Image 1 (cartoon, rainbow, N blue to C red):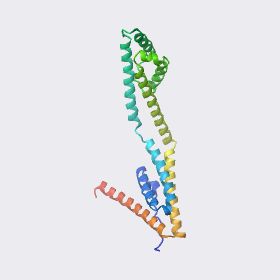
Image 2: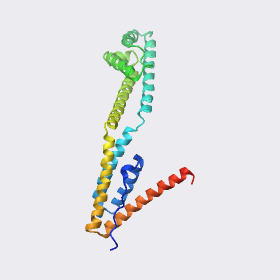
Image 3: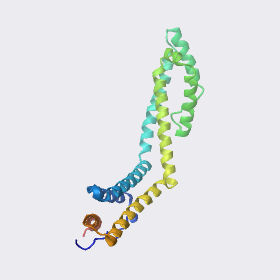
Image 4: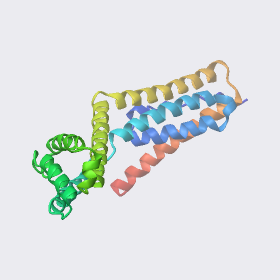
Amino acid sequence: MDTPIKVEPFWISSLASAPVIDFTGQIVRILMADPAVEAEAGQKLEAAREAYKASLDKSQSPYGSSLKEIDRSNDRFWRQSRAILKLSAESPNAETREAAIEVSSAFNQWPDPTNNKYAVEYGILDQLLRAVEALGEEKLRRALVWDWIQALRGGYDAFCALRDQQNQAKTETETGVTARLRIELCDCYEAIVDRLNAIAVLMPDEAHNTLSARINQAIADYRLSVKMGKRKNTGE
C-alpha cells in the first residue's frame, strides 16, 4: 500500500454560509460513494448539513412579500364585503335587506382597517370577524356575504400563520439556533477529518487512503475556485 494519506487542514468554520453548505455537500457525496467505508459518517454529516441549511433557509425566507400579497387579498375581501352589504341593504327582498343591515351594523363597530399598519389592521379584523361570524352562517348567506366572509377568514388565518412563522424564524436567528447548527455542522466535519487522520496513522488501508485523497482534492478544488474568483474580480 502507498504512504498513508491524511486529510489536509481546512477550517470550514471560516467560510460563508453558502460555501459551507456546498463544500460539506461534496464531502457527503465522497463519503457515500463507497457505503462500506464511511457511510455512517456521511449520513451524520448530511443530517447536520440539512439541519443547518433548513434553519438558514427559514431565517432568510421572503416573508415580507408573501405577507403583502395576502394582505392585498384581505383588503379586497373586506372592501367587497362592504360593497355587497351596501347593495344588499337596498334589496327588494326583505330578508336580504334585514340581514344586510344587521351585518353592516357589526361592520360599523370598527373603522376601515385596510390603511393601517399590520398590528392595528389585524387587531381590527380579529374583532370584526368574531362579531360577524357570531351572527351565524344563515344570516350571512341571506345578506349575500357568506363567501366573502369565508374568504376573509381564510386570508386572516393565513396571514397570522405566516406572521407567526416569520416571528419564529427571527427568534431562532436572534437566539442563535442557526449559529449553533452551523457550529454542529463544522464540528461534525472536523470529527470526520480527525477520524480519517487517526486511521491513517494507526491502521491505514487503501479504502480510507482513497477517501482522504478525494477529500483533499475537494479542498484543492475549492481553494482554486476562490483563487480564480479573486483574480477575476481584480482583473488579473
